[in-house]
Image 1 (tube, rainbow, N blue to C red):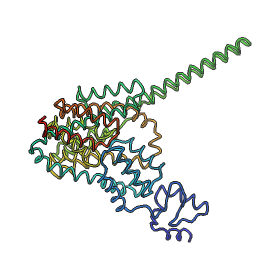
Image 2 (image 1 turned 90 degrees about the vertical axis):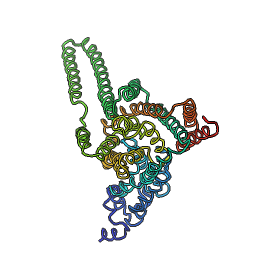
Image 3 (image 1 turned 180 degrees about the vertical axis):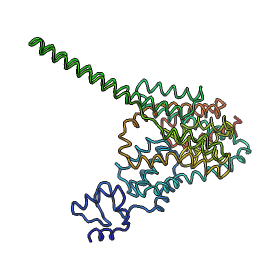
Image 4 (image 1 turned 90 degrees about the horizontal axis):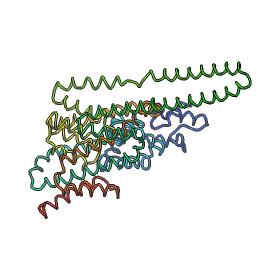
Length: 480
């Protein structure tokens, strides 16, 4: 009767089945507290159950974030935190910190991953889908409108100057992002080597982002999980052997036979430790079977139609977008401009700039490309494809958050990928700058925009928009 009565008191009785509520409710019952609308009142992790939102509430909340989420990255993360921690009180600060750490650890945009995980924690996979769809919907619609108007805007006088200013500021934003990430992460020589080699591989040898990310991650696994651990174990063995020899020398002075036997035992133990060390290293790093099958199958499917080609390109992009959308710029340019010839270099640079002045993530540039390739349906396919891999990975990792974050191989892989991200950002800056900066005035605007970003930490939206306006005025008033 008690259980039935307590369920009937809840406005949302099905919430008792939520995994993150079970332990807290059990603790409350054990302490003699009532489980009703004020369940676990004062508990750290939970507020009132009646405050948990419906799917419509989640959708509307993240729709607002998608409408005002200019600047990308940490700027949008701050807005999400204000919503879910301060206003709605769906999460505590500690829970949001866990959500942010998970979002940063996975490919895709950190803000999109955070929205997905928060929706999943609140209402399962339906909540995750509602949060993610609402977050990207405003920017997708705006980008489709801009793609429709782009052809007409390009025919207007002096608009070239406007886009040149936008492109120069985008390069500045990418360079400052690379600086901020590299300043905190490039602390060891091998990390610098990965950064330089990653940039050179993309710019000089036209390597794919997938190849760079996998190579850097495997290097990180070897160095962090095998190289350093092997060195530490070897040092531990040497210290143990030295202590044994010192002890045996003391014993040998008193009793030669006892010392000889003890020395033999010590040497045998040292040999066992060395054999154990070698046995551990024979296992090697784990294979990525599921990812390999996925990536091998996609090029075969891509030949079926233009939409499948589009989906294939952006599915592969979304699966390896570590460090934000800027990282993917060189690879998207390679696929879109050089391989498939869907856009010219100047059109691609303009698309990247438009992706920065719309709210939401930079990856929304995929919507523009999809529209230019196959109209509105192409825009929808490209948008879903570029965000789908990160969405699925966030759901998979979110269901076992602690195990994912504690996995040594996963963390070692990410430590190898982080310096590669810096190199890929440098390659992205080179790619956009090569296509979008043609004059000394554009270079000057780029340098000033980078200085403003580094000194004042201004929202990138205003920096890019201001640079475009300044370049436009220079062209109209001074004829430059």
